[in-house]
Length: 335
Image (cartoon, rainbow, N blue to C red; front, side, top):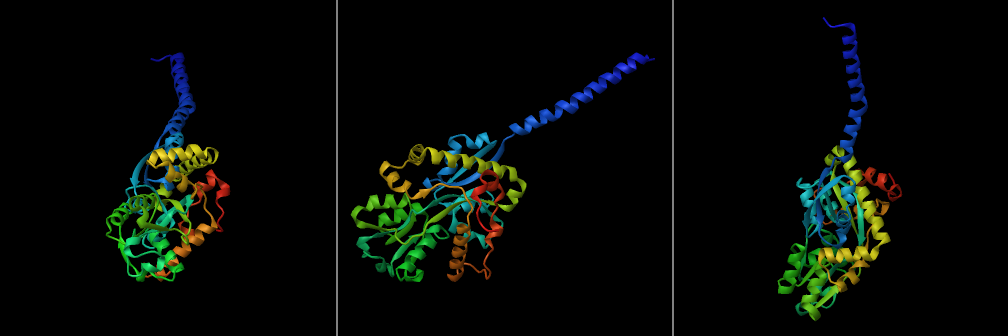
């Protein structure tokens, strides 16, 4: 039979083990939580406008926030948004007009932040096609990437010059295809963005004219889906915090940031001199963004590019919590 001292000894040992579990197990669990890494699949436009996410990766800001970001690279924000919609990515970078063009059919889309404001769209025309002024476009073949920022901005440019979309023959092409078609002479003009305009102008030389006046500024956005955000609010917040650090780096080291873009995407020095001044790399959610989205949506409805009869309420499409946590004063829209 067990003695009284033996029983007391067993009880004391058991109590000691319990105390150890109470104090040390939560510490171990917390340590594991702090070192846990969340995987994020990012569909990104591979170019200067989308540089902030690439800079955050290069400087280790995602890793420092406990994020393992897998990049899916695309030559257009429209293609990056397509990947997000197809559930091939968790987050995407894309332009304001791309978001609007998809928002009617995909109300689950959400805007996390603006990541750049820029003006690098334009129309390149071939002079040997009889185009010297914009009014000469009537009846001409014009390449554009449909459902992209180019489609909307081309319409704005035409309107300012007393033309309409049905005055021209639209040819739907990806950006690199626009450059190729321009050089080969398969289209008469092409509306796209840099560096495609630069590359086409370089190939055509004196045979090309670029029109950039009357083209509005573009907001480049960070997009996701409601379902992913609901499951991963902390991951979304940490992603934005990494971008906030990248934004500060760009503010403090603009030349280093410019050099990074040039080397990362293989741009020439003369292209970067012209392109860099057209960009502002900022994270924000402003009232002006909502106004821009409304204008894009009205245009699509007026052009018959959607079957929707009601304007979306884009306040419902914005998820501001992550940005507010990282940079409270950057959320300025009226709720």
